[in-house]
Image 1 (spheres, each protein chain N blue to C red):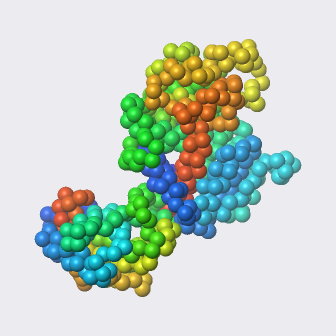
Image 2: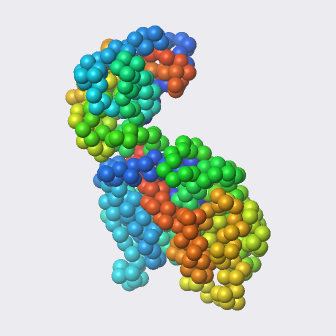
Image 3: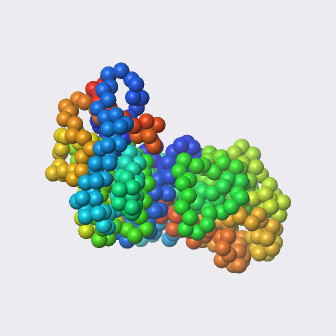
Length: 326
Length: 195
């Protein structure tokens, strides 16, 4: 693996499968009485968050701590960034403190890439603007592999059933990503990673929320949600990101919900084995109805617990080996 | 991860020149039968024994020992695998490696006599890592060690309780264990490094 994790598109299929396999082994350790592993003892992981986040930051923090790394949390609010310090100076300060890895979230696309040029440690992109969020894509891929054991989707795994999925990709799994694709770094990372793993990805959005040059992405594009539902093994709902919307992209929340929201009626159109995913935080009643979010098809809670495990795997693979000291 | 350890590379086939067979399939079978008898003797009939193989080749060896004990005594002891990668002391010396499977029998290891099983005992560092990994799983009543080949050159105060074959070697030599389950044939080969 390379030293950094900036983009899901940088991962080869073998690297992505290695992360998923490592995650699968770590998942079995998560059920044991002692969940802490000594692997990253003595290393320091800095969480550098310029944007608000609870789940991603705590997830990275839990992952680093379960591998015995020391964690320094750094959020822009109440820091010298509020006094006008640049990203570069902040990075150099953290560097001087001896950070072995920097987990960065920033409002500007490409921030993680720039940061990787300035620090000697590993940089893990935890979301940069509307660009990428690779660990979210990895945890989604892990959740899909865990839940849909037969590609193409005859049967979902029985609870508690242990299947050997080592080395498996997501070949032939049909994934439909629905919603605010334009502003979603989750969508972009997922399209790149899931297609690398062999899944057939379709993005569905109102024309105003479809990114420019989406036809160059390795996925199909559709504007008709209802037509895609019966052909989907996985439906991934995206959050309507009101904080990134400076203009009106759709006439009203009600109209959006009627055309692109997932409610119980739409869920009934899905094949029996299909699962519903959401990266969180949800806007219940906008892109996803409460009864869908709480249904057995929903993997939203599993995605959160898998997030810790997948981030452990990423930290281990980036920091655990010789490359960390080289 | 014994395959990654210096001195136990498994890249070449058995027929390659320069390699000397030190154990034949028949001898491996007898050595395992003897170890199975010794385990039964030392543990008074295999009461509370759990066999844990260290991946890769310790796992099939542990399974074979369990089957053998079952044939001799009528009850097959529980058998699993224990990955030690995350507990190794040489992780930083090499690129990060893939994890292997850890499978603990449903009854766990608390209060049991755990017999760790590996193919080659060399520096003893893998076993130290295994003892740490085992510590996270529970508190066994006793821990014992069974290896197919003990090639010497210990770097830690660790000793095997059951040894298939003591094989005096030099540091320049390489010991390879091939097993039916992982390599398609049973053999133990001795060769020189950098052939």
